Length: 253
Image 1 (tube, rainbow, N blue to C red):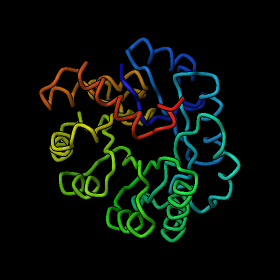
Image 2 (spheres, rainbow, N blue to C red):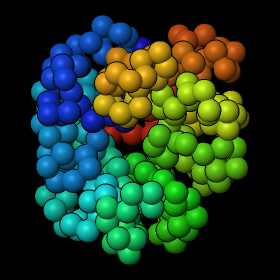
Image 3 (tube, rainbow, N blue to C red):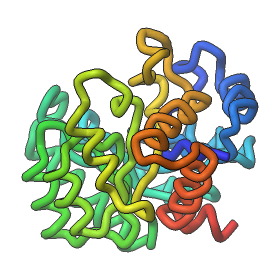
């Protein structure tokens, strides 16, 4: 059974609606889903979904796009049941919907929240590798830190792995122009490898152009299994075990 470690499945995002999306995932062999908060509203939505579905867990976070709004809005949500991580948080210098200074401040504050509340951390980085790693080094990398939608090559993979992070691979690994990413997926130690969809974004081949959904995490996993020369069943078990270590509150429930 697969674990989708990162998706966004609120009703207003998913054409099927949340409940039907979850049923489709279960039918496709997905046993566990982590739905991600990007601000106060989506964090509350994630918590509400997780409260209704035993297969779903939630995170509370402020995406770098929303960093200018400040992290104080997250504080009342962190102690809610079924919250397993802070994030997604980090830096996005591609779009810069929030200025870089606000992004760096919000990222550092969320790293501190993960430390303070003994929660995992889910990191987003785009066009900002150096600053992302510098802030993590300055604030201290939380024990269970996931580099979500890892999109670098072997050099970036080694930088993350040297800091003890998990690498979570999305449908990008199936894209034709992602040779460096596939090399990173091949070199990643088995016990640091995760899979995700980032639904409703980044649908894997052969579903490109369609809305992504957690059911497609098996497509991502199958591609990586073939790349690494193992069976899909084996990789599903290994990555799901890794997910329980990356998000210890899931394993403790």
